[in-house]
Image (tube, rainbow, N blue to C red; front, side):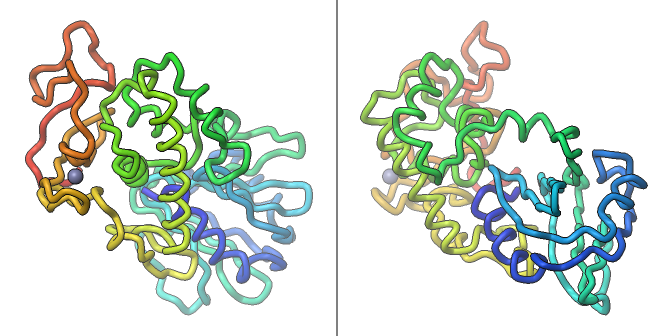
Length: 305
Ligand SMILES: [Zn+2]
């Protein structure tokens, strides 16, 4: 699933090919990928509009077209890219924006969880996830103090807290695991239990990991491609994600993969010690906390969700 660095890379690769272009026609092949307004209004409202800029907020792309904002979310497998009309159409193509230079801005999505919202002039139609986004982790407003305030008193695991977009925007499974390894914090630690020193370390690690991943144009290990169809280069630099069974780059202990917050989670058992009272076995969740994301389940190494 594209996270902040991948979405940012899509934004950067689309900008030079889309900004300044006028939409001649919107071709909607799969109406349900248009969440707001209805597909006919969506197409009619966008025809003739000019892309002024592309911004990113968390994992959302915001296309500015005069007074209107077109919001795109790639979810699990969405792919936005620009190509010529002669390029073969992929099987899971859902929306095509025909541009005035003959190019096509295409939206393909194998699993069809992503799609578009065209906001009204007063912002109507904004997806709730966008309205409730937490701070942007690479912005100056995201300080160790802001992170500390947002983690304080939380009983969920720190992994679940980092995946919560309302708490901090843009992190997903890959970079949450990488940031926690960098900060030497076990993913199942209770979020509110982190010491000020740990929060400060985690804050620095979130930024460092994301900045490096943006520099490397994101991680491709399955479907992700940028706005020109290219893969990202970050995969080789990942320290723990998708590395179960391989030696920890710091201490050599095999990396483990377990379920935390219902997600496959990678960590080094030596660098990131298991917190007390957390069972690392699938049938030994803590009693009375059903659904609590501190539950940690063992999974055979090397499997991938
Ligand atoms: Zn280690």
